[in-house]
Image 1 (tube, rainbow, N blue to C red):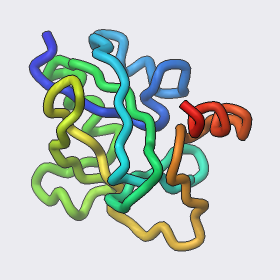
Image 2: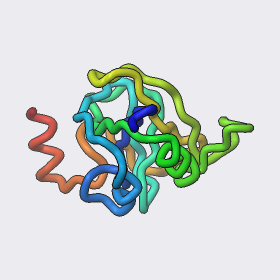
Image 3: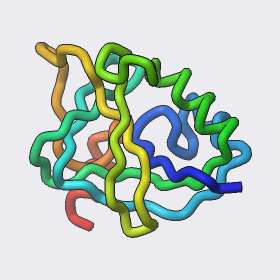
Image 4: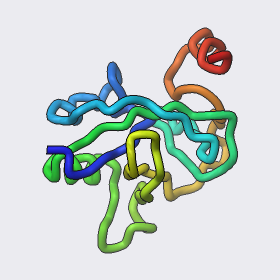
Length: 131
C-alpha cells in the first residue's frame, strides 16, 4: 500500500465530491505550494504552474489501482501526457515526492485563485490567508 503519493487540491480532497476515490488511500497531511495557482473551471479546479500566495493541497499515499483510477478521473493520457485534460508532474512536498495534476487547456476567462483552497467559502479564504 502507498506505492505512490499524490497531492490533491480539488474534488479529491476530504469532504469533496470525488473523495471516495481516496477510500483506500492513507492521508499523509497537507502542504502549501507557492508555485501553483488554481483556476475555477466550474465543477472542478485546474492547477497551473504560476507564482501564488500559497495553495493548500492534501497529500495521500495510494496503491497502484487507486493511482490508475485517479489518472482516469483526471483525463491523464500516459501515451500523450500533454494532450489529456491534465498531465502530472512530480513535486516535492513535506511528505516526500508526490504527483500533482496540472491542467492542460486554456484557462482564459476562468477565475484565478492564488491563495487558499478551491471551493472554500470567502470566510474560509480569509482564515486560510491569515494562517
